Image (cartoon, helix red, strand yellow):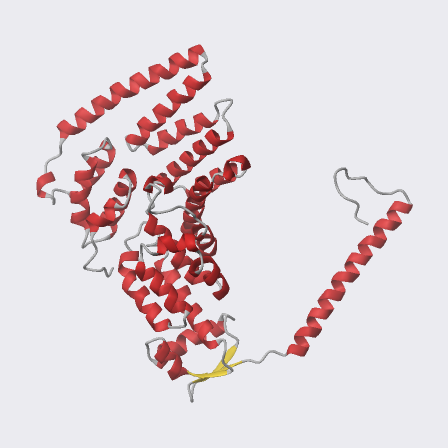
Length: 420
């Protein structure tokens, strides 16, 4: 995998809260031969600041003695942290059982939350999730407290990499509309739903969600968007997915003229310039930015599996938009605009024509693309027939209902307006 020599791993890791930092560093250590040892070295340092002994054991096995300062397993640290953890767990469990015996709802809720946070701190997200879900089952939660609890469950599903669980919690959140009066809460929901869409390969939905986030990177804390996202990720994910899927009008309204999203774009100037070049039909410049960014994108926890598809979508969209205004266009002009030669352009355009994305034919001898002219009369005739059939269908339904009503052969449906 090609990688940029200038990738600053220390700076990259510092953008994320502790758990997200560990998850992303471990991903890089597992997927980058060049950065593996540096990522492992930082991981050892960060792990010793926390309580995640389970990940420490995994990372030690990954290092396999290649990090000189961590060549010996630190059994003293592991025993100390695990001993402290056992004492803390026993105390919290006893507190919860005592509150349950006394049936003090508020105290039960707090004790359950403390146990969830204990597991969360240890990196045991599966058990943390179990206790976070128990908080939701406590009676008399107001809508805002319930929403916060559901968002915490979303955050934990993300750390587990369970995006079906994320979508389920978002569906539950949508049943507490009172909480959606809080714009910051809405933005946090959009972070999680955008991430779930990106991972599932729904780039259009991901772009819509990320570009509607209205947090302020200068004023809001980075914890506001979860533990595995940074503010510049919002610009990167929203910008790249938008470039791949938004129409020209959507690109203008959702990104270029979107003041809230532009605050995120200012954090990643190369993404901003890539989008502006594309919007201004400077396709070679835009694609050059994308090509230079690609090595870093392959190191991203969520983008790595989507880089190839997104880059292909952006390039194909550029070719489609370039050809749109012309009835015919010289392949050499296209190749020049995309900073390539005619042969690969012929192949790419041929594929787009075969997929029905461009209605055209190619004169391979003269290297000219001819756009097919639409038969406007035939199109208008087809639309008129479709409209007529729809009208006749509606009239038939009304006549049938009137006939049934005259014969008292109908069932009244409460709550629905009259169909006539």
